[in-house]
Length: 118
Length: 118
DNA sequence: TACTTTTACTACGTCAGACATACTACGACA
DNA sequence: TGTCGTAGTATGTCTGACGTAGTAAAAGTA
Image (cartoon, rainbow over all chains, first blue to last red):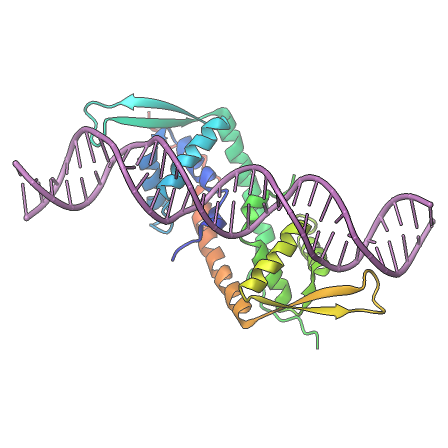
C-alpha cells in the first residue's frame, strides 16, 4: 500500500521543484521522473500534480508556457513549467524545514522502550 | 518560525501514541512532553491535540477515562488516555511508514546539483 | 482498419487534518 | 482583584490530496 498521502502532504511541491531546478519540464515527465527516482515507491496522482502546478504558479514558484509541438509525440500541446527565483528560495526553505521535521519526528519513532512506571 | 503543520500532518497521532506507550496520560501533560522532548521545536496546538484524541478514540487507538482529582492542582477533572493494542499496532505501522517516507522525500532534498542540460 | 494504450491534460467535487477563535472553570499567587 | 497556569470544550474555516470522469491526439498492435 506504499505511502499514505497525508504524510507526503506538503512535500509534493518540494519534489516537483527539485525536478524543475534541473530544467523546465511538464506534468507527464515530472510524474515519470518522481516514479523513477523513487523506484516506483511513490507515484504522484495526476490531480495532485496538476493542482500543485496551479497553486505554485499562483504563489509565484513556477511559470508556465505552452509549447505547440507539431512533431512531438503524444498530444499536441504541452504546458511546460520553469522554476522562478522565489521557487528556488521556497525549495531551499523546505529543505531546511525537512531537517528540522526529521529531527522532531524521529524523537517519537521506534521508541517502544516502556519507561517502567510500576 | 519552526515547523509548518502540514509537514507534521499525519504524525501528530504517532507522537501522542509514542508517549502513551510509556503509560496513560492526559492532554496537558502530553502537550508539555512533546514540547520538552523536542526542545520546544514543536509545540502542538491544543485544538490539534484534542481533536486527535477524539479521532483516535473513534478509531480504537486509545481509550479515555475521567479522573475526578480532588487533591490535584488545576481544575477538577482530567481525561486520561490509554493506548489500546490497536493503537500500538497503528504506531508500529506508522514507524515503518516513516522509514519509507524518509527514503522517498530525501531523494528530493538538497539536490541542487544542476544536471547540465545545455 | 479497428482497438487499445500512452501521452497530456482539465473539471468538479469530497474528505480529513490542522488550526484559528472563543469560551468555561478551578486554583494559586501577588 | 486580576492574571497566570491548568485542563479542557465548541464551532467553523482552510487547504492539500485525491476520487471520478471526460477530452483528445498519436502511437502501437491485432
